[in-house]
Length: 197
Ligand SMILES: [Fe+2]
Ligand SMILES: [Fe+2]
Image (cartoon, rainbow, N blue to C red):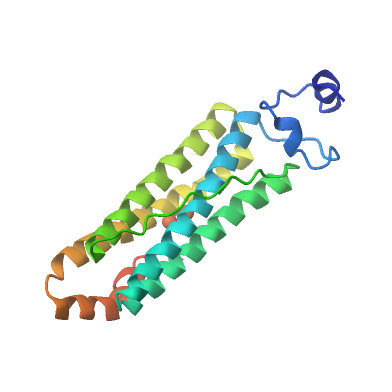
């Protein structure tokens, strides 16, 4: 089937280059605008990469005998996978088979817990930019289902940037070994209180 035939089959809807490849076996009519599909697929992969990054940060903390921070970052990794799943489910519900990208190697060369906290903040700020880009595509395309989906993520990122900022502040304030150990013991209760889920 050539592109014209595929286009006719799918109601003349314009698809992204290579878009034919990601339709679910040609059985479902795609009901998502191509630019939104591209952005949502990109962000789903970005969330999976963030999960990989948080897993590496948890490993670093474990190796540095900071079990509280390690557990906290493992939970963040699980949350990022849940975020990816929400986006992937949305694509599947709308008749699109998502495209999975290669996951880049995460940063592991941290010199201190402060560097880990700063990396977490940078990661969340990047997540926010990516989520805003999906939302902007959904607005431009008048894609109301995707807009509603992204409302949840936009609110979530307020909480995510909040804990990441608090972590940087807390770690900056824990200047000696004893206070760092105390922070590690209480990091979950200190940061989880303000989280929305
Ligand atoms: Fe996320
Ligand atoms: Fe996050």
